[in-house]
Length: 121
Image (cartoon, rainbow, N blue to C red; front, side):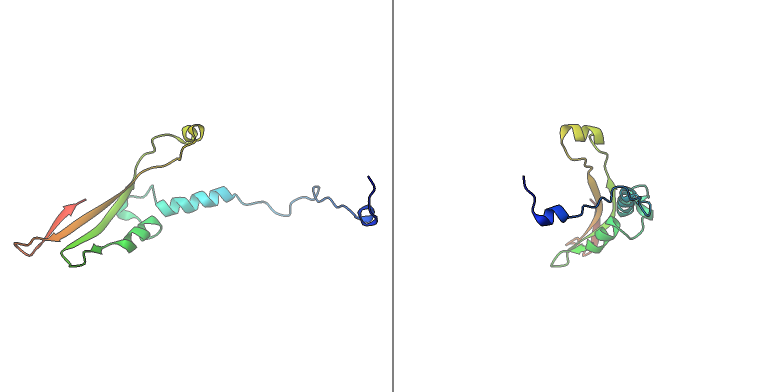
């Protein structure tokens, strides 16, 4: 196989022996810390900060009916326990998931007394 003039004169450089100038950060730890802050899993529901999933849910509620007879207010959330552990999910090729339980209070006007009644959902 014959090489052209430019292929013969092309200089190849290898940078594999150059040492790194600085240490690489642990990118996985950054993502895990961010996700933990988003869920606030270890924090009691009553003392969660207004950030992450808590902030998203508080921004959605309260939900009111168009005629004003009913109102749903957010009171907290809880994450369930996973059915399978991480290793079993990898082996079975399924998603590692947990359930999200949102606790709400439903207020509606009693037509007879014109007062709000409260139900926990």
